[in-house]
Amino acid sequence: MKKIAVLTSGGDAPGMNTAIRAVVRRGIHKGLDVFGVVNGYKGLIEGDFTPMSLGSVGDIIHRGGTILKTSRCEEFKDTIVQQQAIQILRENEIEGLIVIGGDGSFRGARKLTELGFPTVGIPGSIDNDIAGTDYSIGFDTAVNTAVQAIDKIRDTAFSHERTYVIEVMGRGAGDIALWAGVCGGAESIIIPEADYDLEDVIDRIKQGHQRGKRHSIIVVAEGVGKGLQMGKEIQEKTGFETKVTILGHIQRGGSPSAYDRMMSSQMGALAVDLLMEGKKGVMVGVKSGQLTFTTFVEVEKGRHTIDLSIYELARSLSI
Ligand code: ATP
Image 1: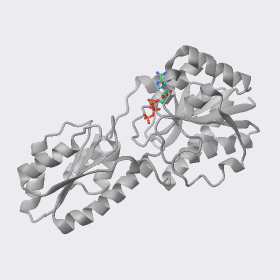
Image 2: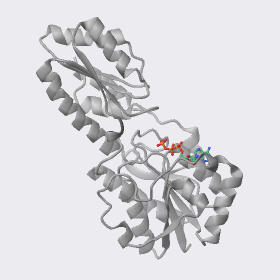
Image 3: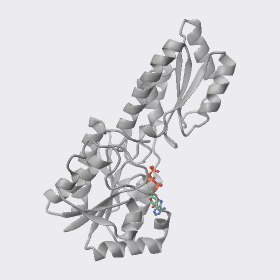
Image 4: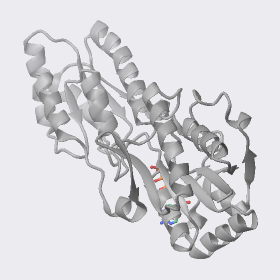
């Protein structure tokens, strides 16, 4: 193998740049030519390739987003378009592709491998919602961003004696809500993986009030939704002033945490090594603290699970 390419696809996540850097530097270290594909699968089908040098990934280790840009490309779901992409890759003498993205991006990568083109995936998703790995690039930074925001809201919640409902990202997975809720000391955490009863949330606020507590923080995952409605109902039923804050896209950006940088560096290097060993149709990941890899087929069949013992812990600590 002499030439490989790397792209980022789907939602961006802090640490993607660190992973691009690791792929490029490990590739060059192993004697490969490495190309960047601009704009994910959209750039792939347009042949938008850029040669990557050691210097081209200098000074990006600490930057959020992705220097290669990312996109959502509906056309790429078409087999003919996938075949065209392979032809373009071959015309450019590229023999392997590393895809940094989420499970949708890996469905595209699996198709390329099934059509005869080797691909390896690196999980990038602030939601941490990808099966086959305990951790996805960007999750740690997003949790830290959410915790910092909760800390700031706590200051004003205390001063004004208010209840705050804070909606964090996580459409299918409550990981950000769970971690940010525990680390931010939330009274209640509402996630898609666990049934919730708003009456129970309200009771907990009232119980806290009875023992002199004058402010409360409720963290709700985006996937559960209804943050605004919940805030309204809590205010009506408790009589306590209740505000709603939706953290939104600030959770996507920012400088990657040290943990995200470490994992992105390790996963980027492993992805190159696997491709060079002839592995294809696999995603690198971390399980029980060990770097590992899983086939895209298993990733698609699997389901990301959340550690519900942390949820129970949160309930026992926020009484
Ligand atoms: P995120 O978790 O941020 O949503 P993702 O990788 O899951 O990331 P998607 O929008 O689902 O994001 O997918 C990204 C791109 O992957 C799509 O725009 C499309 O180009 C490609 N893709 C998704 N599903 C398929 C599929 N079934 N076949 C081929 N390509 C696909």
